[in-house]
Length: 227
Image 1 (cartoon, rainbow, N blue to C red):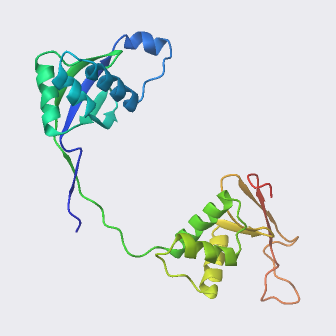
Image 2 (image 1 turned 60 degrees about the horizontal axis):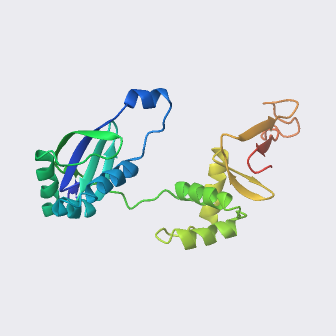
């Protein structure tokens, strides 16, 4: 079992309140990104030239994260974080422009227990991903080019034989996950339409051979690829 991972160790959280938030919301002003708020906070304190310790500590800050409702997470060496704590206690810590600081506190590391992955990779899933990637790259998808793509981009899997590849592709077509035209294989998307043209006597068997049903014609129309 994988060892637990500590997330956001040695971090400070700054709970911010945006000034004139109601006016900004009424005017439809766009909310600043977390990194933009962080840069403004670091810049405001790095310009405290009269307090060299604070200015130096601010320059060593790193962006750790941004939580909704205005919580900025910052990371720095322990000594620099202590300078920020002291500055907050002495009311010397400057907020980013357009905000005020409501609270500052230490963040306890969040423990993450990694989820182990199995060694098995479904071939059908890999083929669908490969066809999708090749469609996006406008690469013609044939069985040969598909195998070449698997060798190049999925080196960790066992390359299927021609028979297994053919059978799996056929199954995916029956499940309407991919389809095939004269231009190769394509992924079925919400823009793909299936039009089934049944024979005149649907669900009836041919009189000359009662053991075989009448054939059914399925047409695929893809609005994305223009087919």
